[in-house]
Image: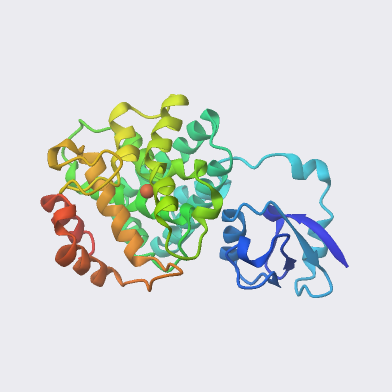
Length: 322
Ligand SMILES: [Fe+2]
């Protein structure tokens, strides 16, 4: 039997049949068995809001009951912060490795929910969840270290946002440790939201499983300005922290975008984010390139891209992985 299900209600063990042609989504086939939560995130990333489920080919019996959820329940929007994120952060008995995995997973879910509806209220709500993650990174070195070691995820905007958030806050923690001049909550929000502007970029460019054409690249590069505008329009983040979003693709030698800033014209917050952003791009799997291990990624950044980054900040960044 074929049933229609909202993508957010999909469970592992369901056999999904996608509504789009194969070239319009990032999967090799139009129908397949869901075997991992990452596949569900990928479907959501591709902005596929509902799919058909072939119950005869599904392997998870409970999913038949889950499909029967009342339509009323389905229409209630999910809270931006998954309750499990809060629970994991405040669970004092949870071992650091398990805690880091849970925080990573539920932060991705939070970013996904935020980017589906990036209103002022949603951003304000997400900032509360991000603040809790920031406080944990600042207070719990063990879990912080575990969070830094999580690199085995498929690349998508939500995963990348969380990784850059964790990396940016971790680097800021070591640099600004003895200063109260920096609002770490606002700063953390800037790192987690650095790619928010991608919600305004054509989804076909975002999910294209190949290198972008020049025209597509121009549109993709507008995400820095788009993100800055969203945060200005919604009155979120201080002017300084909005520079993270606007400047995270600027490079020390003036080869970045959107403003082609040189050296000190780039705010220290933007400089931190650019290091975190490039590192995460290098250690992530992309359809057109193999991912590097953290050591190799740092080596490439040092040997081939050092004039892109602020040297002292990069040296501090390297020390995060010792
Ligand atoms: Fe970006």
